[in-house]
Amino acid sequence: MPGYNDFMTETTYFPDPATISTVLNNTRTIAVVGLSSQPERAGNYVPVYLQQAGYKIIPVNPNLTEALGEKAYPDLLSVPEPVDLVLLFQRSENVPPFVEQAIAIGAQAVWMQEGIINHAAAETARQAGLLVVMDACMMVEHRQRAGY
Image (cartoon, rainbow, N blue to C red; front, side):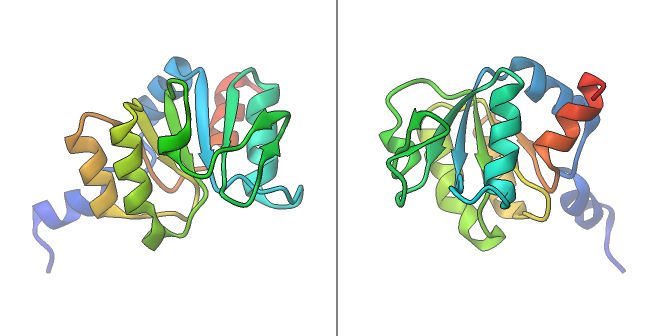
């Protein structure tokens, strides 16, 4: 039977309403790692929605030069301006290097989209002082709070 600490480790970073509200309210610039050029993919329509909601979107994808009217960058370390939030559209096992880059560029938060779960990366981000949202769709959470 798991102990209390095991339970807390597994649930600490799952969608926390207070953290989500803080992130949504304090974010202006979002670097989207894994932004897709395919409109039917969440890695495209979620950033499109967020851009229309007023957030500045910075595409991060080594296979793109431009997306959503913005210059794309191959990685977070190449982004030349401050980033408030790193939004991850990556497989769970691919998250750690992007969390390290988010820390390196001084991002204030990391958001792992719905279905993306990496407790070790979340803990690394938290220990570095970043807010962490994991396994939640930013578009859905924004819509709920914006009354759409």
